[in-house]
Image 1 (cartoon, rainbow, N blue to C red):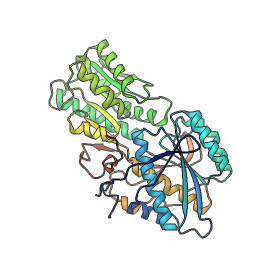
Image 2: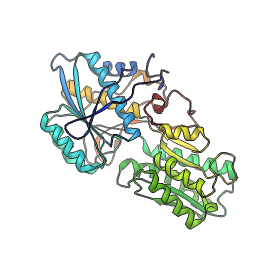
Image 3: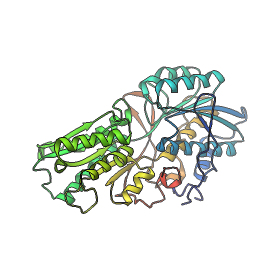
Image 4: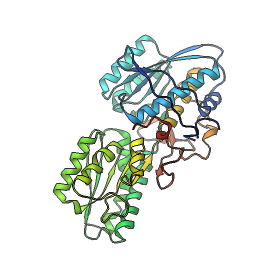
Length: 397
C-alpha cells in the first residue's frame, strides 16, 4: 500500500483549510487522496452513468474539535478519491457546532438548498431523530456516526465504546497492581471517572465499559469507591476543577486512579490537577496515580511519551471518516438508503488494529451499526506506530 500507511507509512502533511459557508459552518478543501480510500471507493460502487454531481451535508462538532477534525480529514480523502474513481463531482458543506439547535438549523438550511446525502455527528442524538426520519422518507441517505440517534434506521458508524472503556479499566487495574502490589486496595481509596455529557451515547457506553471492569473490585476491595464526576463538557478546566475538588475532599493519598471518557479531560484536566497537588503520574513513582483516556489525539500520544498518561483506548478518527463516506457514496450512487452488502470490507485494512469492521445491532436504534475496534496504547500499539490517526498530521499539537 503506497498511501494511508502512516496510518498504515506515509505521513500526511496536508492541513485542513477552512472558509465560511452559508449555513454558518465551514467548508474545507479536500486534501490529496489516499490509496486505501481510493480502493474503498472503487469497491463501494461502480462508475455512475447517471448523475454526475452530488451535494452532501457534513454535520459535526465545532471546528476546533481535534477528534472530529481527524474524522473530517478522512471524509475529505474519501470524497476526493470517489470523485477520481467514478468521474463525479461531490460538493459538501459543513455545519460545525456544539449546539443541537444550530446543527439542526444548519442542516435544514442545506436541505432547503438541495442535498443528496448527509454525514451526521449529532451534538445530542435525540434532537436529530425526526429529521433523520424525514430525510430517509425522501430517499436521501444518511450516515450517523460517533453519537447514535435513538430510533434511527440510518446506518451508524462508531467504534465499540463499551470495549474501549473496558480496555481503559483493565489498564487501571494492571497499573495499580504493578505499582502498588496485589493488595493495593485493601486500605480503600477512590477511583475517579470523568464524563463529559451523560446524554451522549458514546459517553454512556464508555462509562459502562469502565464499570464492567472496575465494579468487580467491590468483592475484593469493598472500601474502594468508584466515583463519577459528570457533565464536564469534555473540557480541560472543568475536569481540572473536579479532580482538584476530589483531591481536597479525599486527600491526594486516597486518589488511586482517574479514568476519563475522552482525552482532553485526562491530559488537560486530571494530570495537571494531580501534579499541582504533589501527586505522581510517572511510571515507577511511589503511589503513582494512573490516568487513562480515550480517542488518542496527538496531545494524548505526547503525554504517554512523556510518561504521564498511562493508557489510551484509540478510536480511529480518519478510518471513521473514510468509512462514513464509503457507505454514503454507495447509497447515493445506487439510489438507496441502505448500504450494499460487503461494502464495509476495505481490503487495505486487513490486519490493521481497527479492523475488521463488523455489522452489529443495537437496542437503541434499528439501523445497522458498522463497528470498528478500539485498541490499547501503548500496550498493543506503541506511541510511535504508523497506525495512529494523530500521526497523520491531524491530531493537534
